[in-house]
Length: 301
Image 1 (cartoon, helix red, strand yellow):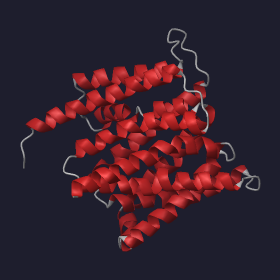
Image 2 (cartoon, helix red, strand yellow):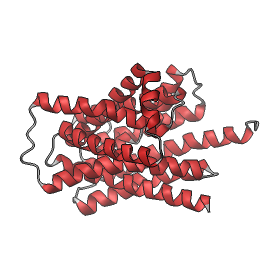
Image 3 (cartoon, one colour):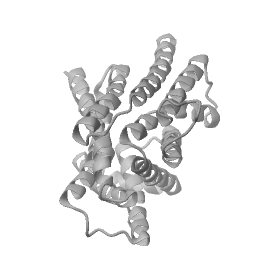
Image 4 (cartoon, rainbow, N blue to C red):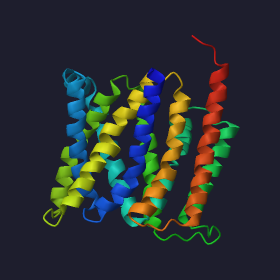
């Protein structure tokens, strides 16, 4: 019963994450990236606070933060503040299908950064996975014209790649974090939301022109990219006896997302975007296969 529930929760999370690229574009049609971050992070903060209240974890929020305040401030500045601001700007400059596909290379970036900062060994399979995935990024960014190395938006591609560095760096910093993961994520939003409000105020952002659709889209992003979906995914991983089975569900997300982008907002999906995405996912699969083989031969405790 727990395994069936875990798969259901995992599938729910994947389906919700599949919709966010479309929601990003709908929101950015009316809001600037900083406005989008401000609204979404505020909504996510409220949602995660309610979840912590329901799980009776509110009392641990202050003690967790005070145990290492500078650490949680740093985490909050990296994610959600910097990561999502840069990611939203990349989506603003690029077709959503390109920005999303490039962002999926973050797991490969994590492998390289783990080798540098955590002194983890990069094996032959990792190098193959890196080469395959980053070749996929080049195919997407150049629309298949690899030799010319010309991009529709060099800044957009650069920001999308920078977002993978920030996301991977965030998880590297989290490797030694023993706090409750939902409380830790909420602390990040408690740090980031006031900063986002301040930046939007300094920029003099106008809020009067935003329609009800714009507010709903930004609220949706806050709930289902940053908030509730994260809890669904963590719950699925906690319930399952087969973590790999749940983790592999995420591979369906970018392809479902492409269908939604083409159907809902009528975005043209360049054929090379699909080819590049397949290369990126192939690299991730190769990387995961290595970990599964490694785990098979590890002694049990």
